[in-house]
Length: 137
Image 1 (spheres, rainbow, N blue to C red):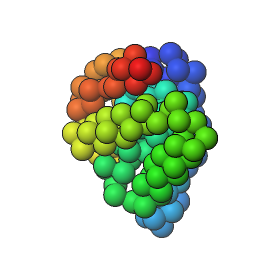
Image 2: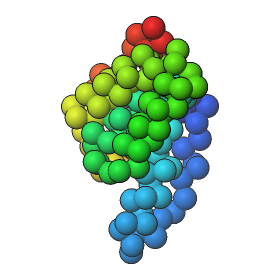
Image 3: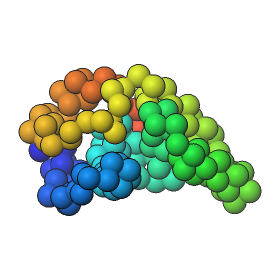
Image 4: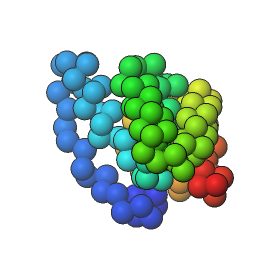
């Protein structure tokens, strides 16, 4: 619960799922646990942080949507916000590396981790979070 309190998250936000349809369950659960992945991985909620989480997700589940989001962010920043380009490239590299090393978070029952201190949860999930100072540089 400590990481929920520290990051103003509410663990009661997750609905009951219809587990009879595995794909719908997975898709819904993936969306509803997005903010938890931000907290565990250590990426912020700015553009660079969002791209980092997408890279992490891609490393874990190899679906086209995270790859498309990363590509769009790269193209858009190259033309509209070139000052973000270096941070986005680093976030993609860091997120992908973290995603490959970590336990697959799409198979984790996060409710089992709510009462653990954040660092203990990260250790059990094999997550060495990104350093936000490095990401911002």
